[in-house]
Image (tube, rainbow, N blue to C red; front, side, top):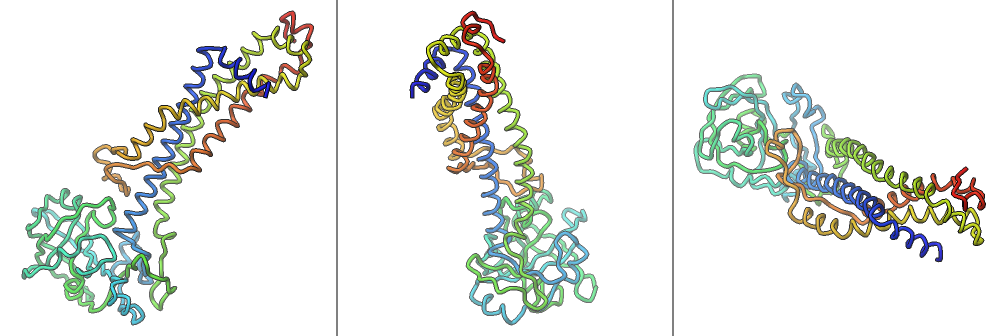
Length: 390
């Protein structure tokens, strides 16, 4: 207890030098927590949006379907299994039929995917109710990016060409029945959503699907003949890998920030040991052992972390709370990077993140403070009183 009081008195007595070190270290606290919280918030937001808009509670894929291989789309369709009919009727499953197509916006030719879905489905957040139309034309639903890229508006007509199950090309006009906004590019870019009954007739694939999306409350039944079940771990692997890569990049930032702060503390401790030789000799002459003096200087350095945590709390808590409420706005054009990311990211700060950061900073500052304090072990009280460091 005496060592703590003495260490605190010595630390505060150092004046501006102490508070500069504390402020730099507090910046490291706040920036590390803010950056990690932003990545956690992005991860959480991307996962929730992807589940709501694209993957639901999991998906059954036709056995040859591979979204990264367009050549599989031609053959990746099959009759919906009898085991799934009850789930489809109850609304806990919704089939999606996928086909390659070519669209001609304003006379230009562009590849796209035709996706057939039940207009009455409630598994995905896509507003498919807008596909309920009494018009003679086939209604189509598109995302805002698809609409912006092709200068399409609600009520516009669009020529679509496709190839049916026999390889015969056909074409028709669809009418844009609605435009939805989403952060998930996989249901937006170069895609047209139309009623699955219309697409089945166009492709001559009655009662067939490419994937079957499960509701959030669906209980996995395992693989079904011709169909493979894909869970969240598989479907969200890309997001997890992306966040992991960003975390590795963030770790470089953490190391640089901590290195700057710890270097300042290390230099301060080296200077303290050099300038306070007479004080050290006095401590030893008064009966303190070398180990106690080393502990005193180590505690002084470690207290930088405690004071930094207090200073960081003063301005960091209001700042981080504001960012968590208002979000961090993303620059324009971010949605064209191919990432599931909203206009704003709302950071998430867990108790484990805050406590873990504090523990790491306290440990590193204590270790850095101990390294120069080891010099004291080689000092003789008589020489220290004379101000001579061996």
